[in-house]
Length: 443
Image (cartoon, rainbow, N blue to C red; front, side, top):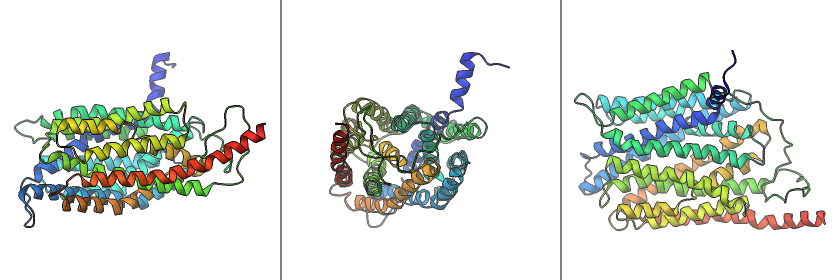
C-alpha cells in the first residue's frame, strides 16, 4: 500500500529524532513547574533554629534541590558511559529509550507524591531510578549523536541548533500552560495532579514513540580522524591542507570553556528558582510557568542569532557572543527586585544558549563517526563532575548571603562566565596564523 504524499511526509517527520525531543520536552517543562511548586508548598512548615521563618523556606528549598540535583547528576555517570559504548557499537536508540523510561518513572513518582501526600524525600529515590536509566547525561548526547550522524560536517552546527530550537519551542509551549494546569484540581485531587498526569502521559507517548517509530539513519562514511579542524574555515574554493593529527589543545580548551560556562549557568539558574519564590517577588504557579517560558524563549533567539551572526563571524566569535550575553544578563539579575526587572534581565540573555551547541559541534568534528557518541558523552560527564563543585558552592553561598545580598551568586556566575571566555579567545587567537598560511598557499 502506497501512502499519499502528505501522509508519507508526515510519517517521515514522525520517525525523526526531533519528534522525540518535542514530546519529551513538553512533558519535562510541565514537570519542572510542578516540582518547583510542590517543593514550595512543602517548605511552608520548614523551621530551622539558626535562621528566620522566611529564610527557613529558602533553606529548605535550596537544600532539597541541592540533594536532588546531585543525585540525578551522579547516578547517571556509569550508565551513561555504558549506553554511549552500546550506541557506538550500533545500538543508537539505546541511549534514548532507556533514559526515557527513567523520565517516565520519575514523573510518575512525583504524581504519586502529590496524590497520596507522600514524603517529598520519595523524589530522592525517583532521582536514583532516573539516574540509573542514564538520565539526561545519556539521553541528550544520544539525541545529538543521531542528529550529527545524519548531517554533514558543514551543516552539523546548524542541525544541532535546530534540535535545540525545537527543544526550546516545546519548552516554551509547555511552560506557558504549566502554571495554569497546576492550579486545576477537583475535590478529590491536589494542586498539580492534573499537570503531572499530563506530563506522565506525554512521557509515556514519547517512550512508545522511540520504541516503535524512531528511525536511525545509516551512519555516513566516517571521515578521516585527522581531517577536522576547529579553526575558522577557509573561503569556499580554497584548498585546505588537513592537519597532521588531532588538535588536542583545542579539544582541551573546549572542555575547560564548557565546564566553566556550564558551572556559571548551572549554578546561577539553580538558585534562580528559589530566588523568584521569595519576597519581594513571591511568584505564583502561573508566574513560575511564564518565567520558565521566558527561559525557553532563549532557545529561539539563540537559534536566530546563529543564523544571522554565522554570515559574518566564525564559530569562536559565536561562542563569545553567547557567553557575553549570559554574563551581562545574569549580572543584572543580581539586582532584580520586581517582576519587570526579571524580564529585562532575561532579555539580555537572548543568545546565552549559543555556546554549548557550537562547542559540541566543534568537538564532534575532532573524532571519527564511530566515536562521536563517546566523545559527546565524555563532555557531558565532565559537566556532571563539575556540578559536584558548583552546586554545593552556589547553594551555600546563597544561603550565607540571603540577609545582605541575595543576588551575589548571580554576580559570581557572571564572573565565572567571563573566565570561560578566555579559552575561547585563545582558540580564536591561534586561528589567524593558519588562515594566513592558507592564503599564502592559494596565492
